Image (tube, helix red, strand yellow):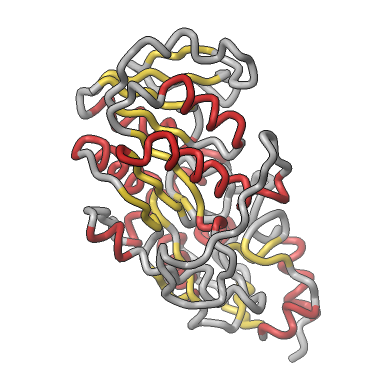
Length: 329
């Protein structure tokens, strides 16, 4: 196939390009090129999607598959207008943030969505609403050839958000030091390996699959995720369990961001955040590698970046020690 990736220089886009090339497809990436280089063997078309001539170099070709990841409605509509009529298959990578609520465990694609923004260029606070607008534009333009993949938390090698690797990196960084762990072992977590996600998206394009899917990882209890991270990371120090209420009182950041407990989310109304069904994607061929393989490979990536670097997610050792010392005994 002749594949066009709108992006292709960072994380999912680069993984898509790498796997597509390995399958023997020809890959073109349209991007500014500021997030890094394209995969070896791919062609970079440098373009600013905010300019009216952004698609001039690629608009005359009948692409077998186009992959779009942008969350800016103006960019998405521009690409659809320039390329949608000739594309044989179109994939829009959306997000679970499009849903109006997250309070129902096991919810599926039929759950109500947020109201779409009417802005062409949206602020980060309107991320979910912007993604809804992008979905609607995609349905209107290429709905008969379209996959909408509403991604959950994506992790694995190449993830620079530091979320999926936070616990195994912590285990490996200070294997003999006490590890602070929320005492919520049954809390749900979910993460999809970027390699599994990309492979499935390519399968859909090759087969001409259409539809809307929650592309989420298997649901795993938080306690099991931490124990797997400890095992893979070689952590032999004591585990210090902290009550949920106490951590909330200390205003410890949740799920993501600096000085956070990564992948830990107890906020009321988010009981279903990490428990989306994902059954439709599984029925459409999505396969998940073993969680241990994901964690092992993520640790290798973390070591490559440097375990002692300043992180975008996870507690620093200093903050963790501070919390442990102040924890009521």
